[in-house]
Structures are given as structure tokens and as C-alpha cells.
Image (cartoon, rainbow, N blue to C red; front, side):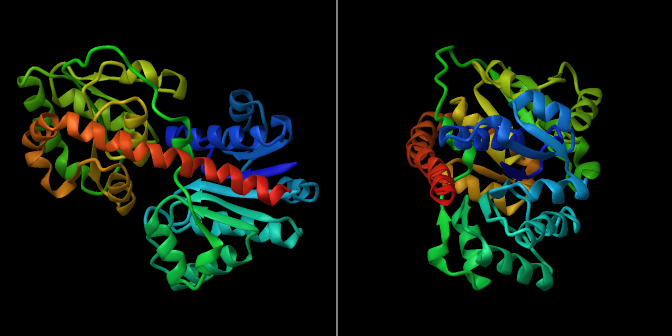
Length: 343
């Protein structure tokens, strides 16, 4: 039995896509799905969605019991280890890792993106956890350097890629239409920038674009509904799921997204992405994909920026498709790592 920990069961499509990829990884190397136990905020939904066993993520008594019969504990992937959006994330996720070590269960740190971490105590804890792991992989060079700076041996850290990249491009043969997809996630300056964002939507509409808001995680939908109240004829997708993403992206010309996995979904559906840089991980994934990234402080000029991106869309498309070739193989290396540990 394998126990899996991450930000699962919170209706965050990026993390759910990671879980889907992890389950595929484990199944491909001979692990039956019914022997995978996922710690989830919504255990029943997670169990039904992925065909796995799932238990409440805060039920420490049951987690301790399940660890007694586990052959591996997988922590990740995603942005679990940071203390900017929450001071509770690191103690929770590394606390579970400590429980696994206490039970004598090998730990794999899987496909994570680390930081920012402001607390020196947390940085020391992260370093200790990674040094003790049976294996570890990170999704970008910045995370690898972060661990090296903390004293984790470079040879121990596998630089792979976000697990979601393993699926490759889903070809879309529908002609591109004048549709702009927009995703925003909660951020500190939102209250002050609502008017600026409604101006951008209106600007795109005046240029002949149909604008659609695509929520991908907690808090996104509320922002989309707020924008709809302030603008004319903004479409807000109400129930976006992994299985409906293809329909959402089909034929769209551009996806403007604050979420890292929004940008990954965009290139995997062969839709031109434009990152909104609210966090270092967004700039990091934009560099990996060779795609443009816009600073939030310059939102007022985004409308003209979109014009420039669309003018160069064919070149950007060649660039991100070229980058995807290497990223897909790097993502599949997470599977190789898991197989090696289980052997």
C-alpha cells in the first residue's frame, strides 16, 4: 500500500491533474489503484474520481494506522512547501513526512516546486526532510538550486518537470477564433485592481474578442462573477473539470492565466498562453515554456500587450511546442524514480 499526500480534494484543477498523473505513474509500474491511499479534503469524491482509496487528510489517527501497512509515502507534487500564502502548509506536509519516518516508511518527495520560504526554521526542516528521503524530484531549476543552497546534495535531487507534462499536446484541429480565456486567482491587490481588470476585458471586447473567464481553483469563480458584474457580456465558466478542459480550450486563441497549471493546460491544449506573474513559480514555468509573462503591476497596459503576443503567436507556438518535447520526457522521469524506489 502506498500513501499519497498533497493538496487534494480542494477543487484545484492543477493539483487534481498532478494526482491524476501520479496515479497513472503508479499504475504503470504495477501498483493497483485500490492499493493507493490518498489523503484528501473530500475523500469520497477523490475515491470515486480516481479509483483509489482515500481518507480525511486531517485524520492523524487513521493516517498513523495506515502508515503501519505502507511500503511508501509520496509527498507531492505541486507548491506544497512555501510559507507565503500560508504558515500552516509546511508544518502540515512535513509533519506527515515525519510520521512516515517515525513508522519506518520510505519517503519520496515527488515533482515539487519549492519556495518562497521565509522562515529559517522551515528551511532547515525542508533540508532535513529532503536529505532523509529515499528519492526526490523537483519541477524546475530554481527549486533544485533552493535545495542545494540548503545543503541537500546536488546528486540526490532529480530535476524533472511537473508531472502534468507527461500527457503531451492534445491536438486541436478547430480553427482559432477570436476568443480570449482569462484566469485570475485571489491575490493581495485584487480589490484595488478590479476596475483595471474590467477595463481590460472591455478593451478586448471592443477589439472584437469574446472574453471568457475560466476558474481553475479556490476563489477564482468569485473573482469571475465580480468581473461579470462590472463588464458587459463576460462569459464565466461555472464548473470546469479536467474532463471538460478540452471543450473549454478548443478553438480559443489565447489564455491569460495567473495559475501555473493554467499555463500548462494551455500549451497542452495547443492554445497560446500569457502568464500573469504574481509568484516566482509563474515566471519559472514561463521560462521553461518560452512563453510571455506579464507583470501584475502593469495590468493597465495588458490590452496592448495581448496584441503584441497575438502578432507573434506562431513563433511562440513553435517555441513552446519545442520546449514541450523535453518537458514531457522530464515529467516521465518522475515515474522512473518511483519505480526505482519501489524495486
